[in-house]
Image (cartoon, rainbow, N blue to C red; front, side, top):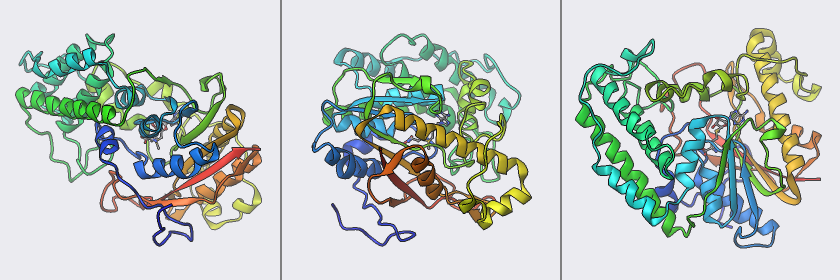
Length: 415
Ligand SMILES: C[S@@+](CC[C@H](N)C(=O)[O-])C[C@H]1O[C@@H](n2cnc3c(N)ncnc32)[C@H](O)[C@@H]1O
């Protein structure tokens, strides 16, 4: 194990090991709260594989029920695991599929030939609009994106559809009026207004994004990843029916960290600008960390309820307090599913950060450890932390909330 640098909160910290090919394969799209590659590598190499006395994941089943952009799936595949992932958002499943699916030589050739196609109409009227469209795009920019979208959608049955979609989805963000320093497409005072991006420039951006996807395919090959397909599907991680029927051996996942990021909103610019893939209605009622669709849920035990952050939030902001209790109830359901679906000798890794609410840190990692114990999981190794270095997040404080500076890897096994 590499030597540990100074830790945060008294916990040992991980030394990151950025690997060229993993990094090239990973960097096809921006995504909020992506897991650090070094953290996933640490979990597989220092905890999960040694627990099985193995040096590769051959013959072991891996699952991530909050797969997001597919980072854990990528590292697990590079270690030889049979890989499965799910997420509530269609856009996450497409992103994960594109990141982890290595195309056959024939499909790769066809994907490369897409660099030469030009489906632009060069018209100035968008094919469809929505209420705030003109705050994001000039009309001819949006039309060019939608011309590309019609072309990409015509390939929806091809093995490389997800790869094309990811290149286009990122282009949508790149050519918009979004503030480039914020981790989800957002307007702000620092945004450049509505940029004038000509159709030819939209096409050039799309092609450069596609070139990145092609480079990622090369990296998957160098990592020794096969062209066999993987299972990625859409589903609520807190619902029994989403989980694989057969038990899994190794799980590594990072659920949302409290009420911080609105993942439905994070995907909404692309879902509006591109084919009407509006995910908001279904996903809002199941998203962890939501502010609406709340049920009657229990309060935390006294040990947490007497802490200052808890009492202050409960008295000052009833809605956010109820939403946080809902979040804890959802986290518990996820841990219940882990206990039921991970094999007796399996390992579970959960990555979380302690968010700030009302200017107070919520001790989410300690609460998660408590919830895990209450559903029949025991700790496997002492927690380790990882300083967030490369996370795409605003560089200066924009609101009353401080960013999360460290995330913590908790590890469990079923009792
Ligand atoms: C912290 S991100 C995961 C990041 C991922 N590890 C990566 O490296 O890209 C959390 C993810 O949880 C998903 N999510 C939130 N609530 C969910 C739920 N109830 N079921 C499944 N996925 C959910 C979000 O869509 C988001 O993709």
